[in-house]
Length: 262
Length: 208
Image (cartoon, rainbow over all chains, first blue to last red; front, side):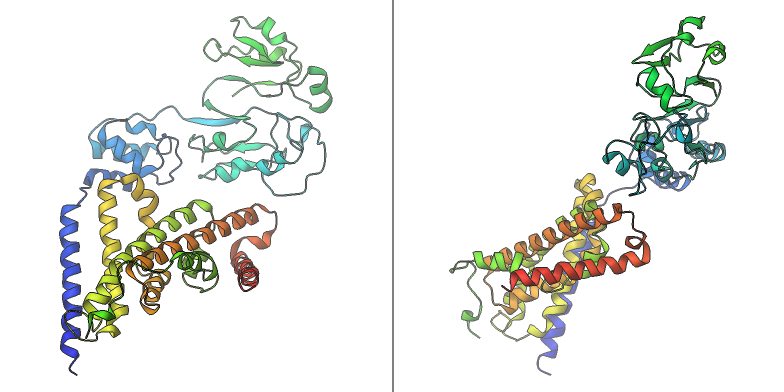
């Protein structure tokens, strides 16, 4: 019993001291948070996809309120969300033209396999094993790293062994493009552009052997292009999107059906 | 009620064995089984285990610095109060450590937002981590001097860190395997089994 009083006193005093210190610290080290930033974070998609160039939605919100960037850096917001954000910040926001990824490869099941691959179900793991399982070392492997990178369930591996974009779900954030180890995905504008959908730098004869649709670097498209917008880079045709008028001449003349208009 | 009960501040004997003991032969995770919840929960990838290791090492060292004087100058019967209040040590240590962790969170949030983002989220997790409390209670139980207790706590933190990082490395490799058993609910079972194997082999080495 004699210890009761000092015990209560010591513990009480210690508790009070700690509490006082924390109260003092919370005043001194108070970090003001902007209520507008908090409200904006609530409105943002919260996918933290990184398409805006910031690590997450909270970071992007801070920079938007600070005026470093305009809200349309966010490719994941839909029109409705932009309207709400516009109301919050008191500005008009026009959403950027929608974009979505395309696959610069028509291989998949049209391209021969070098061996049966049994192992971890990721493209990155497959590359580690003697290059890719495809005869074409530049093409899509089709094990779906892009599918797993997508935060919006907008991409799947179709029956032809190639990624298929579900345009309705796709926000054009580019997470799949950054993830793809073969770099066969690229971001395209929604309307119009013409693309050579092959990435192979192999010689024409070899491409002909292994793939039904691969670019063989014959140069017919280059000769026929009225704008001179096509050039051959390491045995594959590349279209200069600045010069291209989307006339479609090259699509008709390509003997390999390797050029498409989106 | 003599001052002789308070150990000397600076150690006189060689304290290197204490450091090795904390880090290896009496490793907090593998031998004493303290702090296992964070061990299982945060070793799924090396980034989180790195952050947690840093936070735990820091908090362990700082709590040793704080709790030793409180025990000997406030609670023990050699203190100026003259009462033996050592039965209050657990609750006092929890109080001090929790308040200190809260304070550190305030401070780094104010002065270093990047550090707060990488370290701050783990701080609330360890405010009353059993490994941290274990270190400070063992310091008292073993009667370490002030210097030795700080070194012991730092060694314990480093011991915790290397086990965390090593396990995270193994678990990251396991996740890459194309074996369904290693993921999901059954995966937790396999993680526990893997931890058991690590512990068993570690015992074999340490007890030799």
